[in-house]
Image: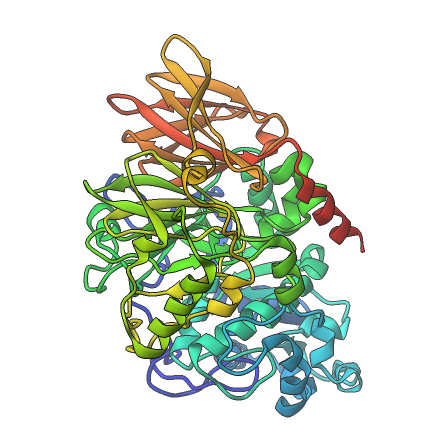
Length: 618
């Protein structure tokens, strides 16, 4: 059996032997579906029926032995050497002679790769890079790839490693994958590195390179081979894996893309983090100092769980978009392509601290500087809060931009506190309030809130101006980005205009005998809208060709029934999706009292849609 307690990084982010292979307070996904208490489910799995998911290298080796040639491709961070050793031992025991071919042998050298990616990663220590235009082929020596040829004197020839499909062998293709949170945990431990490099760096540098280079390149490669894959494998456990035949996975993805589904959330501590999630969500590690946020549904980083015979299999969300984006996105599919445009996440400041005073880039700025398609327009929905909690939003009437910048720079240089409310308004927060944060707006969530952040998908482009003089959990100051911020701040969002334009005023738009539909208008810059359904028993709606992202924000549980007639139960604070292809849905209140469900969806039309659509065609 593999020793997954010890690893070091090698060229493709695989690993050999050192002390720790995973650095996180979050538990590893159980191999089999555990029994969990009622309430919020941290392991939401979609059933596939019996016999669909297999576990262990023995079963995979048995499948592979039936083919004279096999390709094993996969993501960076996969422990390639351990996978090869496990399979090789089984083949040897069974007397099957295997010729192994390694894609690492065809990679360009580390110095060449580092030079290749340098234009997209910015200076060392910079917070952001630029989305790459590279392709996976650029990381390889084409002649060396072409030289990888089968040796027919062996029973089986296997090409293994990231990029195996680039050899163009006419052979069954296995794809090894893992969720992005586990990849990051391996990076933190020094057990995984970036694509094409032998060295590890600070976690922040590796994440930046992953976000702007590795994930872009490897996701494009995934999309190009999606229909060629014979077997998908989940390699997050290290010692073992689960796997599924592609036809069964595609059928499962097709089913949930016409019904309803939920992604697997994951949780992180942070400088300003709070205690609400630890107290209200069963199964979270109580030894964590705090939990700052939950990735409820941030598509670039969440996975989707499937279950068969209690075995669990997790696949990164992007596979749903590669295989079923039209069913999920409906009439907006051609606009956004494989990008999922809306995210939900929790910001937990209960018994914690304020978020930094910050803003986000304009559409033009994020495209020119960072290569993103669209920008980070946000809202704060207050799911829960203590009395006296607040949100910082918009400038005071008499804001002097030059004075504000000077005081921020002085604070950064001399570690002096800033009387923020002299410059930024603080608004009382109440449950179910919706604060609007279009790009360029100064804002922060104050302490003692549980914020549901409903936003456009980009999620790392936060320009911090003031961070209350605190240190990060690593004991180091967090980056301050005053220059970036002042190139994007809109100082006309001040005074009474903030109350009028940036705090949503709910309007009742439909009602029945025991239900109401409230519109929570967003800002004109937001390309998505928000509504709240309040019901006593049940209510039905059409999707109208749109994808809906929902959360139960008051009540104990609701069921969703779509065209197939099956009911899917969701608990308080769980995020779930109703794809456009579901066509219509019924919400059924399963608890006492009134259930309140927030839903976000794309607007009928928006000026940014034409810009994004143009990007998809060039």
